[in-house]
Figure 1 (spheres, rainbow, N blue to C red):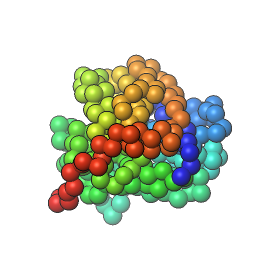
Figure 2 (tube, rainbow, N blue to C red; figure 1 turned 90 degrees about the vertical axis):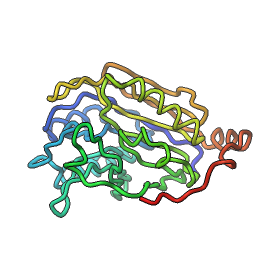
Figure 3 (cartoon, helix red, strand yellow; figure 1 turned 180 degrees about the vertical axis):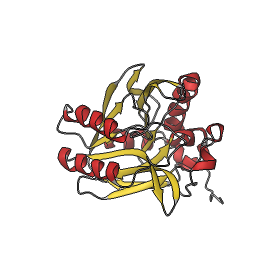
Length: 257
């Protein structure tokens, strides 16, 4: 296991339904980042905004190819979700792309029914754990944050990673639940949200955050575009779990559906 994992989270405004403009904007931000990063994290639906209108703008490969190009160029993994069309079905798909061009993904399980996401996008099934540089990383998307059973750390993952378009009106819940997920799972927890206002009139205040396995804040940003960085330490994680072995008392279960 690599001893450290250096992460950058890009909290940005998103242009509605314009993948090219959004990827160009992120290209500019990424070009100014430090060269020694291991992982760069983008928000949920970073190419379009959180839209229930995937027709004609769902990714057919261009945005994923952009992710692969950026990963190769920066020698860093790139992670973020896209609306994707596959076999005439739509998915809110969280991609994790390595510098070698290997793309793994998780399809959002808990679709946001208040926005009608369940009527447009297919439901994901299993929690996805990515093995990267010896770290075990669990992928989650936005509304998944409200459902702790699904993210319960029975797989001994090291990092719980959320991407989101979480609105300003409920941002207190976002702040609280990110810390709770870190504490209850004795895992690093990173949540990257967007800022700005979308074409549905929803305001986003950011509040992207990075937390250690005891819920202490490593990085935080609100209200504006910002790049958050943190260096996660394997020794700190392992020593904390050894000293406070709460995971030994966790409940074991199988998720039935």
